Amino acid sequence: MIEDIVKLKERGLTLQEIAERMNMSLGKVQYRWNKYRQQQSPPGENSAPSVELKKENWTMPFEYKEANACLMPRTPESLYVYWSFSESIKKMAEHHFRTKWEELPDVLKIYDVTDILFYGHNAHRTFEIDLPPMTNNWFLHSLEPDRTYIADIGTRTFDGSFFTLLRTNPAETGAAEMSSSYDEKIERWKQQDITQPEWLENFSTYSYYQKIR
Image (cartoon, one colour):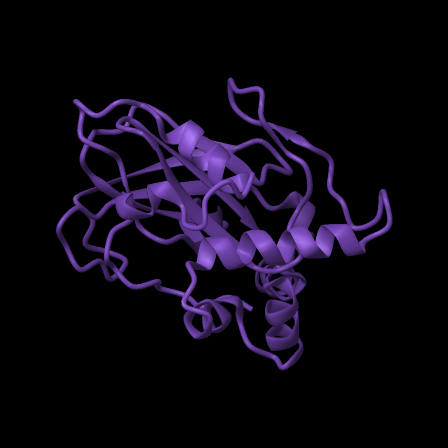
């Protein structure tokens, strides 16, 4: 399967296009592609320092090379988001703000988009999280059960306004009475013990808002 993904990537297809052509979820294609890229790199090359997740023991072992943002269900009151910026996005931000990438503040903006067609400014409610430098993943806690959320990863303008750089897929928190077994399901999928993520049914039917290369 990874051979087919590599061949399509070499032909210039985006990961979203590859997922559609192979009838797979985007998350599955991203996982296999980035695992392949990690295996191709010599030890210590193209890797970023592990970032300790907030109040968790799991760490993100490496940074993806391509623009990538994913929001995943976890429990009825929490979600998990991870992301990576491409070099082109970093250069664009540096040029726009006339500031080095490392000096730009990192900010998450969360939108509650339950039962609406979201176009960027019509969320039920929003909140922002100022992140530590060099963060590439975060657990979102104390959310409302049975709601749909979208996360933007971005920075701040000179006047303090939020500026979007990446947008995730929509993801839903489960109903309050559901058991909090998302961690186990995600781990089984990561270990490839199942062919399709068991948490896939928790994603909204909204379309992705941004293709990534």
